[in-house]
Image (cartoon, rainbow, N blue to C red; front, side):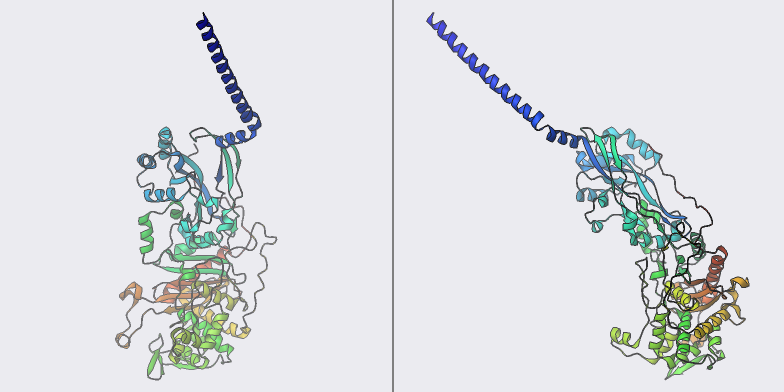
Length: 630
């Protein structure tokens, strides 16, 4: 009996302890729940929202580039790309293998993708392939459940409606490389492009704009359920170029008939570059879409250098076009324009002979005749009277030998030698014979086609130090007047009489029966042009070859042929346009370069390229996306 009572007491005591323990436990759980759900509710609500809602950075639309009349030269088109997010993928290699089987052959570069995945943060999308076709999009969508961390992104890619026509001016955009990363988050976005050359590079920050963001709701697997909010950011600013896309296309078509060359047409009063072509060109859209290795090697290995903007980076001996500078220097020094020199085909200096291009000579030449018929002996004579430093000083006034520091960073300075320059560069004295060949644009003298166009413009615009520009100061659709007044450039200090003498002689080069470019004259008197031919040697002609007969260009390798040059202006009575043309290894300036310059000046006048008002609304050209919206 006693034993039963003892057991009952023990059981009751243990039950009470268990009940008490349970009460304490439930009280603790209740207190914890109260703490989490009431006291910490705001904190955990925020954490839950952050897990459910993702904030994604959006690339801003890149600003358009248009010509002087509003015609589009660089626009944006829809681009469908496939991206992968590393943190959402269990096996990256296996996923990429599946993707490769679903995409067209050669659609992506595996080494590049793995490199991007390694250097970018785990949550940043990495582009696998761009410019997807509709069939590729369909295959990926059907297989989406087996591709975790993979999604199709709809973005914008750069497109150049003119293709290679303006490739060197426009430049191109390409993927961001490691050296371009500055810490700006937008640079790490999949498919983001930055300007690499030309106007695209110079104005990259302006064209780029500011990134936006998108708030999206995702499930536990990271899949997007819906978009909650979207801020597109600030699109890049529009850039209005001075180019006339019609004249640009016309010039590119003409130069495409030559192996290699360059042409520049500019407004002599404002400095607007109306056309700037380097041939051959390249397809800038290929860079935007992603250039393949074999395509890059073909461009780099091309002997005609399609990636070089020869209009601003091609440095050539200007040949007889430089006689304009020598003539101005002579007149500036007080040499009488009627001063006569007898040309017998060569001149002697010490024991050396310096030849004229015309083997048996021109006879007596004054400055008009020497420019009209391009007599070398005349300029040898005045060069000895002037000295190289006076010629070089005039060249600088005319815009030669220095960069203009305008909107293309690939510009080269050319070279105007002086005695001090040679001493500093080679630690050697200057020789008189070097002065002779410098006066006819050979030897150390180098100039770019842009510099030659500026030289011509400064001569014919009243002696103003006009500078080239590629961007309109006032966009045409905002201009308050149809043709704003030209900027007030400083005077270069060349007398009106000297300029008139040289311009008259350049008129005779084209429109006189004995002019070197008479076959290229413009028949319409209202559009008549003046100019100067030039032929620059790239090899030394030996005495043996002169005695036996100088070989024709067709009989020697292309690389050893003379460069053909021409500078000109029109109309002769009221100059508005200046042109410079260089045909690399094209032979004579009168036969290869002058006809091109004549056609360009005639077209510029016919279409009135220098006007600022557009003829009417210009439709925005675009290219349809390769895949329709999903």
